[in-house]
Image (tube, rainbow, N blue to C red):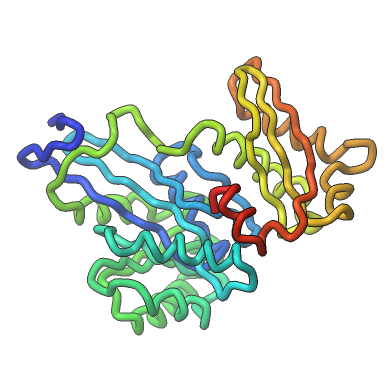
Length: 290
């Protein structure tokens, strides 16, 4: 049964589902798995997701809008404070909250810090990375998680897909009657320029790994298709050399990997610029959209 955008039709169900948790517990991987395609970048580095990213799943008679959020943590910078604010701000209007914890690393004080602000009656606790541990360990984490008093508990592996379909069906079953918010063919509301900047940042995370400065940001400054100019911001001159690499090797590798995910014919220019202490300056964060 189809629905007109913004109007409530009899029997049509829709709602907003937010995915929260500590940094690096698999929130972005789970969102991509739900949608069956990549709408947000993935990395094993904390603070990979820095803004709210929405993914839309539309099926006959229903639509779920999933919100991937930055990992909630104890902040050390102004950027960290804003990331936490972004993550917490999504909770008030959500129909379902998926609280992810790391089944491999175990439930700790960081999870308790996150759990303290979640609505008990609307929260489903999800133990992720179940593929990396045995059943006994998963059972142990579920037992510990039961102390939070949330509504439902699911062990899954966002990476392999184990248990994800059962979780998804449960979430969809909780959606209330409501309007269709997005067109049938829309999978994300992320602007193209933002998406390209995120692809570049994802490749920097993957290629540089431990050498990559935490204080790095990307933004598209020119878009004249097929020509795209993307700036990579670092905080110090020493970091600029690291990102460029010897004879430009790192930057070249990042460009090749990012272009491989863009439409054929795209020309991507990468420029590295120093913006001193940007993650501690309010105006710099405003400019970057954080």
